[in-house]
Image 1: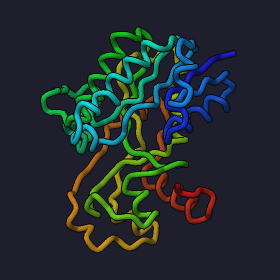
Image 2: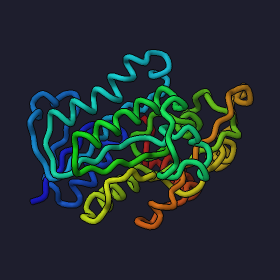
Image 3: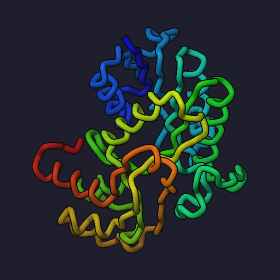
Image 4: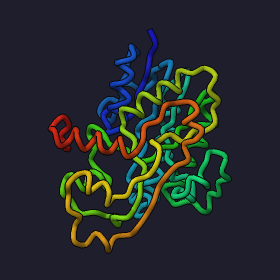
Length: 265
């Protein structure tokens, strides 16, 4: 039987990865903070590291803590477990031009000095994976929705919380369940090269449009928040996978929440 080890298996993305592994018939070892010591030394055909820090503000406010969460933790995972193939879930934040898909394809030149602290730490983690895991796959990801969503502009709108971005900010969102399927479809391909791959849904949608679809009024101070944009170039992934569309992903997710099929934490 194929074996899979998911690090961060209780998290937002990790729980979807673990569920997909089980659905595909893998013998699953689900690792998280509560059992990592007991699991240390485990081996698997496939390891998916879904334990990366996604809270960008930590790296800005406390770069030492950000380094520990995004870099040192990856090295510990590489040291503590053995696997046939190591999948690292990284971030599109490694691109200084995360807003422009014309400038953030996988072959775009990267200048670490131009990266945000968060992006720089994610890039450093990628270098560790390249060095310590000969058979690896690095996936640079965009934004997500899905079960267990706890943060981002979509969550804030649906939960009636304050917005921290301008309504005309635009983002790319993939459902974590679609990501989980993509991770295994890619990892199970023996011919796939180890070079990084951008994975997300196609296209970007404004927060203002999401609010319209969700039937939510924008907070009165939303226009005073910073405007930002994030859209990865997914042309290469689109040649390997059937990628969903951001707009349809969001409309489907909103329908699930409104119908009660999904409950936000």
